Length: 309
Ligand code: KMH
Ligand code: ZN
Image (cartoon, rainbow, N blue to C red; front, side, top):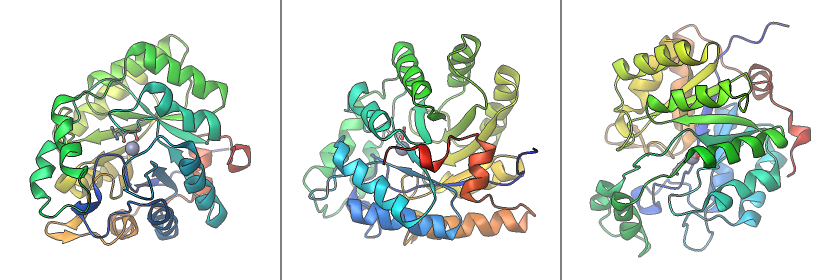
């Protein structure tokens, strides 16, 4: 059966980098994360990418019960494909990062395709009266940290995901990481279909330019052959890059994990607002939007009845 030739929109709703005082609309508690994800799905996002945060201080957390509450509440309200993070936060151990996927056995989980500096320190200067004391030091700490994804770590993630039939969504922050994925594919540790998420414009990774995106797409085609790809970009590069990706045959990731604005100077009131905007752009380009079940077909996912939440 031919797979649907439609656009998969992903909404990455909270992440583990932005802090609550960056925007009054930022989904920072489990209840806000659930609501933002469900609304983003209703707006057209086939996939929602989630991290867990502590209900008291909104800090990213590896707490399994909180993650289970978030993803099961989303599942109770809609049939979105839930992509659970294995990136967690920079300070989490690889066991802490992978534990939610092992316990909850989602259809899809992120898999970070290499180590990278992941710097958001300059955002601290934007916080005038932060709600929580941890916010400024948290952002500043990224200046002296590395997002560690060693080859043994990636092999550990990949073999564990394969064990539970979890499709990896490869987070690719720079072009060398495509070769890392090709290495694991050639070793038979990664199976097709391969799903790449080009995350552009992270300070430490590849700058968010259309030329760089074209270079990543070309390199992926050469080194991996057929695959499915999507694009996300940090901050003000989000819509220009994701729109370019749609024009190049890619899929789109938006959401407040990547950018708290809808357009320069205008804060997004929800990830759904960004989903609606990219959906409009896609439809004006004559593209059709995939439903969650069509995304399941396109990515050959195991199905929502096979998850453990
Ligand atoms: N929070 C970042 C350190 C993922 O979800 O796997 C990494 C991240 C990627 O968000
Ligand atoms: Zn993430």
